[in-house]
Image (cartoon, rainbow, N blue to C red; front, side, top):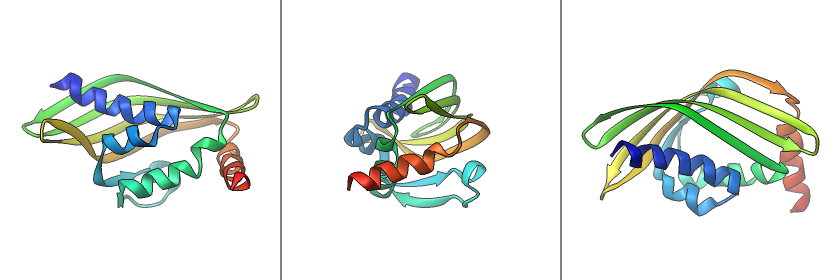
Length: 146
């Protein structure tokens, strides 16, 4: 059971690196409580999965590539609800420039019809490194392509 839970989390980040929007959508519940406040300053909010995908589509393809590395999974399961705490490092590349985001995540999943889906996703930022202007450049590259 814990393997299925961790697989869902890994699938989310693999989908982001692969720009596989269906893979991401299949990992998420219809609505997700998204909390990147430790990085953005914006409060947590409940966002439709489609809205998250739309936002990521306007940003991630602007990087030449991204690489998410996850480790140290700790799963607490109570019936059909699971909380996963883990470390994550994301490398975002444009040419020779690199933007790195490091932190831990707290991701909550619910089991529905034998499938685990993400209902809450929180980043606990440890640090950003490298060229922190790359996210703006990535978004501009996506909008230039139309």
